[in-house]
Length: 408
Image (cartoon, rainbow, N blue to C red; front, side):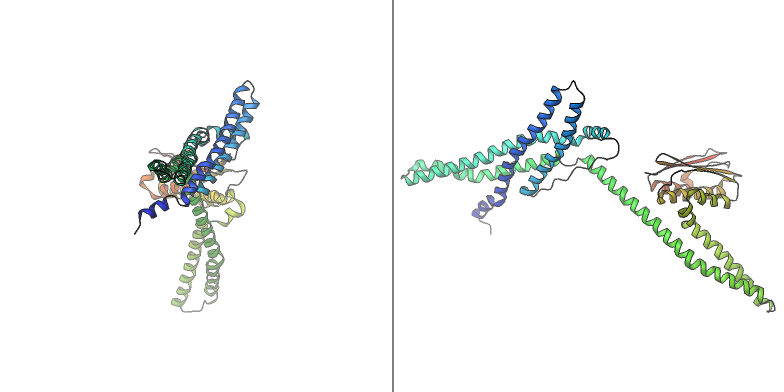
């Protein structure tokens, strides 16, 4: 059972002294932060008629503020065991001036400055007064009480003794409240905001999705390689042996010859279907020669004339190339099944960091993603890499499918 003495003893145990050190250590850090930020601000105001000095001061400020934030985060972790999450890093691409402008426009920089310049010093000053001054008053009251007792004190000794005991009990509560307020302010101003957390979560999901897409593409490549090197070779050997038997054993009874003939034809048909499956999984020519050669094979196998134009001076990543191949393949398959078109046109070109695909046909039109799984599959494939899909298919045709895939 917990006694009042146990509560009082736990009240001023090591966490109380750590809070006291935390509050005391915040004072010099706050003074350094105010001196650095106000000094740079005053320098920029005085020399505002120039352009170089304010830019240099702003550049220094964007380097000093994260260092001061790191000091504060270290203080919270060391004395309060509170982990203030780090702020998300800004993109490092672009010119130094552009990165500087991005930093100055970000709300996180000004939230940190607000803590270092106003909130932190105010809470630190209040904590120092409540901590150091109250502890000193408690010590002074205790010393006075001891002196009065040694000098043969009377009833007047009760007042400093009661003051010392009251301060001894109340000060830890004050320190707990001040450090809790300081932690709340630090998490709000020095840590990531709700928007930053959402951005970080979206980025994490995007990276996870990219890893899943790459893993699926790698698995398709493995299956294609295994089928090509294993099952397909066995079917080729079987079809070759059945063909040799069909040519050699001409004197067999007719029922036996028909069995060999049917087996030979079925083996060739199975080999053709397996090649189509392998081609649909991931064509080897796509890895070796790129989109131009792979799409040329699709256009050649189409049941209608296809005009193909490929202008990709720099190859995209294997995942983007695979998505582009499957989008064109599925689009032409849909044209063959539903459009009743007599011809089609495929255009592939790279425009900066975007790979643009355009598939047009002169069919009957009326294509609607809500009515068929094929077009929904195109949207899902392009969306898996943050691509966009646009379909223009009025009734009576023609139908135009445009897909933009990011290459960066």
